[in-house]
Structures are given as structure tokens and as C-alpha cells.
Image 1 (cartoon, rainbow, N blue to C red):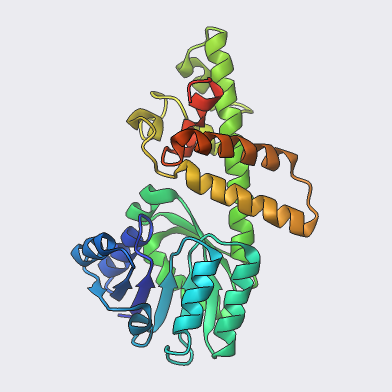
Image 2 (tube, rainbow, N blue to C red):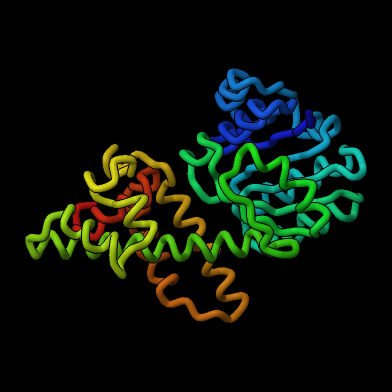
Length: 293
């Protein structure tokens, strides 16, 4: 049994931490939102009074926070309170520069660190089937891998510090672009009198096949577990897609990469969010493409 501090118990953090408890670990939980703490307590976490109180008694510290500034603030507050050699795993989705700074903060205090953002949404967090994209030194990754396993379907070591975040924003740029493409195809099919099922049956077994179509189809029917069958109740909210697309464009500008489709997808999701659909699943952008949003 490992003692794990889990800081950030929101929609993703709570089920992730619950799977660590199920795996036999002792999990010390902290969040600023009382309702999140109540849920975590019901999942078997030991609730503590502060992030520092969690870190000082832990072998591993996992953070799941909204943005880079939050991760750096928490690291600055707690890293001096943890025992030397404690493993820090950040599973937030943040900018690459902040991830690298977090590694530097941890290293300055003699800590091991891994940036390990996830893909798979709330459903994957609940099922323990998330994909972890990890960045960090090999010894840190080797120590992190068995900790991540109860929450994971797949764990990929992408390279040195910050590489996990780089992989995450590249992956989600693909996802945002492909969902718009799939949505446009279904809108066109509707105009041409082609049924949703017919398009799905063709495209899902030919060159149009992609995850946005076969796993997360944006129209009701062909894929029963997709959010389209639940009035686009979010598995991955449009606000989070926009956040990740903005990160991709910040990275593109900083590195000199040319990403015109990524830029256009960012603009479309910004409009979708501005129209009041930030809490809708990102696949609901098909209604924006129909002119209904």
C-alpha cells in the first residue's frame, strides 16, 4: 500500500482517486470545493485540511488542477513540506512551459516528477481506462507507472519533462479538428437525404474512419454510448476542448508551427462556447454547424 496525496478532486480527480482506493492505496484528498470533498469521502478517501497536510505524509503527490498557474502555486506551497524523494505526478492539462517549470520546482527540492495528462474523459476516469501521456526522467516514470496503473487503460512514456503535455495538446488538436469534420459530414448527409446510419456504416469501415466517428459519434443512434444519445451531456465539455485548443495554438505560436486547421477549430469552439454551450459535450458542436446553436 502506498500513501498518495490527491489534490484536485473535481469531475476527473474524484473517480481517479476512487480507483486508487479500490486498488488498496491510502489516499489523502484535498480540494477547495466542499461538495467535492464529500464525494471523495464517500469514495473512501481520507480528507485532510490542506494540500500541505496531504503532501507531508505522502509517498506520492498527484495533482489534477485547472491550469498551469494553479499547478505552480500548489507546487510552490507544498514541495518544501514533502519528504525528499517524494514522487510528484501532475495529471492536469496545462501549457508545456508551466509543466517544465513544475519539474524544475520539484527537482530543486530533491523530488521526482512526472507530467501525466490524460485522455478518456469522465467515463474513462470512472472505468479506470484513461490513457496517460507521461513526461519525465526514466526513473521517475518507472516509479509512477504502477501508481497510474489502477486508473489507466494505457500508459505511454513520451519523453522528458513536458513531453506528456506536448502529446496531450497535439492529440486534442486532432480530436477537435476531427469532430468538426465528422459533424460537417453528417450535416451534409442530412441535406442530401442520407440517413445517419447509412453514413456511419460506410465511413466507419472505410477511409473516413476515426475515433470521433466510431467511438464518439455526434448524432444519436449509431454509437449508443456517445453523448449524442444523452442530449450531449458532457463526457468532455466544450469549454475543456476550447481550453486545450487554445493551448495548442499558444504552443504553435511559440514553436513556429503552422496549424491552420487547429486555428480554425479554436475559433469555431470559441463561438460555440460564447453562445452558451460551454457545459455541453464538445460533440454538440454539430448543432452549431447546423445553425441551431
